[in-house]
Length: 225
Image 1 (spheres, helix red, strand yellow):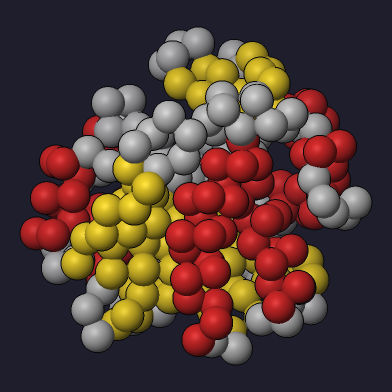
Image 2 (image 1 turned 180 degrees about the vertical axis):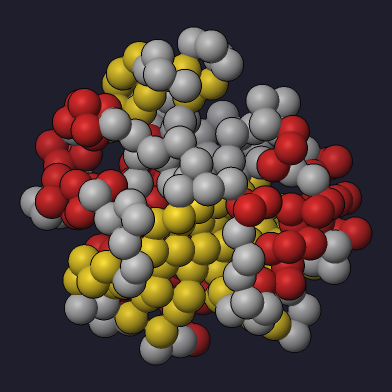
């Protein structure tokens, strides 16, 4: 996926458009706003009040925006986060230079953090912040082997089921379910009935939440305690 077109979204933050698959990395209605709504508010902030530390898995790191916003929340609330990102197609150095999140973010450290995230590839336990330990895995989720009962939160941010159907299968969600702690949650922007039925078949309790912008719904899936 070499051909990327930089797009300015409605909240002033940018994203990439991939013409070959007709897909954006983030919502055109606001990259930062969507990440905060789907992953920070519905995911991280739903669990952070109950824990002093959290293990988070992100499937589809993309621009690194979800990870950066998570780091800032961890520092703000003084919660230690061990973050694992699975991404088989990392952005190039030229791609990273185009990201304008530092210009429109509340944090003047955004540029530094985004750079640190993307240069952590191949390293183990990179301490980007006293509250944020980062692990970047350049592989497909199907190729990973996480221990059972490990993650409190999963950010599932793969491309849509129509574009990447192999990412939205029972095998993938069963693998993720097994890797999550009882009471752990998975959040995704996708709300397709077929995806929810697959999640339920793997043991998840599935919730419908209000989606971002023009999307009526999103999904939060819970591993029973």
